[in-house]
Length: 179
Image (cartoon, rainbow, N blue to C red):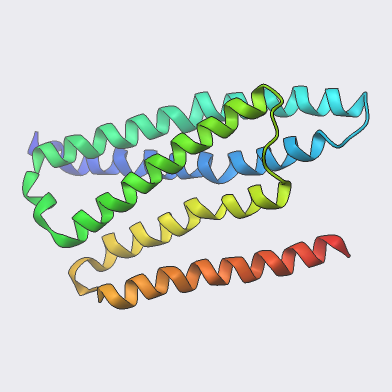
């Protein structure tokens, strides 16, 4: 099994990338669905039908399978090299992975609501929600690449600074859209 470690690691990374692709794009489709509810018929019906189809395909053909496969390959990597879990950076990374799974499940609940035409989010709120996956991605990538070289205090401050920067950029974009 150890002979296949790098192949398994490669497959894990490929499915992490496709999982994030789905998590980045689906809230954008949610934004369009939320905005389509404000349209007049027949545009509203046509848009919602097409957007729901696109969302369903993305969610069940790309996002969910990628999440399951990325997680399965990760568990296989841990099975092959169980000592990796003892590394502090890996424990922190796994904490972010738990947050990612929670984000994914919350996204599934939003998906189900919009499938039933229940709109609880504003389009701006959904744009902001979309940044959650970005923050998790930054945290995980820096943890994996820097590992023990990272200063945890600066790392945590950096993640919060990134979140603040995204909020500022979101506000600027919101003003731009209004003008």
